[in-house]
Amino acid sequence: MKTTLRWSATASLALALVVTAPAVAEAKPTTVERNGNTTTTARTSDGRAITNAAIAKEVAAFWTPERMASAVDLDIAKRPGATESTNRAPKPDGPAGTVAPLAPSVASGDDVSIQLNESAVVGKVYFTMPGGGTASCSASAVASGKRRLVMTAGHCVHQGSGGQWYSNWQFVPRYRDGVRPFGTFVAYQLTARTAWINNSSYDEDMGIAIMHNGGNWGLKVVDTVGGHGLRWNWGYNISLMTALGYPSNLGGGESQYYCQSGTWYAGGQQIRMWCNMTYGSSGGPWLQEYNDQNGLGYVNSVVSHGDNPGNGQFDGPYFDNDIKSLYDFAEGLSPA
Image (cartoon, rainbow, N blue to C red):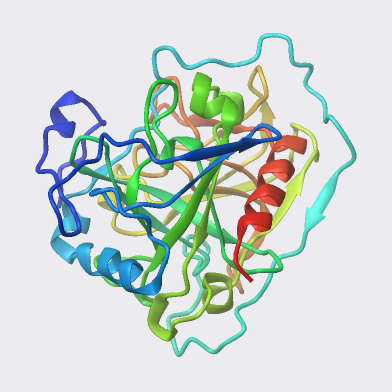
């Protein structure tokens, strides 16, 4: 079993891994900001934009089983200097909204039955850190008209205040013990809330990646595995939420686990639930109405952080108009 580490200066000194040429990961990609959202073209760690299928295939080939196994599970500990609102009232900021889940459009040929703690829509993400070393988080595909979106935490696409975007960003739906049943999908573009990028705001710890075609059939990610629905402005107190992710403290981050709990107000623009998942579950979805027969539900938050990971609870950003803004922003940037 691989050793699980919190991301630290020691971990960042791990072998710098690049796709081809010598790393120039310190170069900052061009970013664009609009309506509180920021985006960048996804890049290899040697600085090339991943704008075509050939480079996307190089990134997928880069992620060998050995490199995936050695990736550090990104921590969910509360970070020094991270911010949160002190004057936010615990109530929605607009009417409740919903995007319906989508089933895959093709038969996968995958004969492993759905289980409560294992959805084909949920997977692991792998990326290269600025300065070298590799890390992983959790994420899930989300339904949209263009069928290319993968949702995760902001800290799983960008380091936050004073930091940079990650590179070689790849999503592996329903990864399990080294097996990639649907293949892999490489990011075309990364998006996050500007408040996370500039201020490491936990209230805005949200990220969405736009994916190239990929997987075993060369299709869009949602066509391949389906996509969770999305809900926003549904209130802080939800009677039952299901969180899914790849925690290193349960199964060594090699398979999905789940927890279920009601949610409550955690301060700022955040919600809290009971759960004992720790490092590696960052970015995993919090789902309303999770259906363990088809592996679909409605994303209503993502795993962000915990004051004391493993103490039985963690926090996520409350999904209000901000997540809908980021979702619309990413969908608008997506190719047809």
